[in-house]
Length: 381
Image (cartoon, one colour):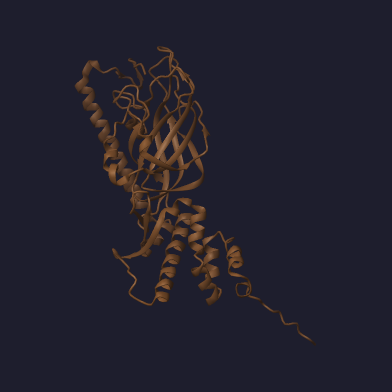
């Protein structure tokens, strides 16, 4: 009885390199890439030599094109490549890059870290009606009022409802995968019928300063009530999202996660829907802004090495599990972060109380002793 011998062919050995690379480029899962690299020694060498892990990262997150070099950090010391032959050095560089980008791909696509607010501080607003009482800084407070005053940002009034407004924020240091931006329009509870000053649409941009070395520290000293758009390069622009005229925190989920490295966010508020009775002008008012993202720290860090946004990626292998596994150890920093936010809010309330005591009867907001949600005074936007 004849037995047919099944012949197995390794296409990597038979096809041109470009064709093999094209076929392997369809591997879009980190697990598939790892499995392909252990099929055989030749497959392992092909995956590393072709830089497939890096290509997958760049395909999913184009912002990584700004990385010009990677290093593997161990106990705070950067591993250096010893003097070797040219071929040995090149092979070691390819091995290093594969390890870093394969780990980065896992962290970007399989992170178990809970999303958290990654806004560091407010930078500027394109206009502000009553500064500093209606400053953009107020949008970092999740409440729409303190003890003796409302808390919100207001634009200047416009007769043309199509005039846009822009808010700019600095995001926290480190690498963040941004997934969602939430905005709550302000309801003017002190005006008749409690109008809500929302925008018609909203759009988001992310980027970095045009000249970080020259104006990096000066960004903290920009006038909060004036435009600062000309000082930034926006490398990402989202589609427009419709905003509803409702007094609630409205979530805007990005179509694809966006990688942001200690960068800046611009919120474009497009179109106005609410006219104020007293002056007949259109305003946009925002109560609260929150940016949700997953941090890759402490597994990865990035340093800007050139003024045009070029980056150095640092990888700490011993910390990879902290990003990939959801455990009590990863929840502790989150709880501490929430505790710090609560403490900051309480300090803000205390400061506001002291300010209200100093202002005395001149303060326009006087709370009803029977109900903190009702007020007897009012304020014109």
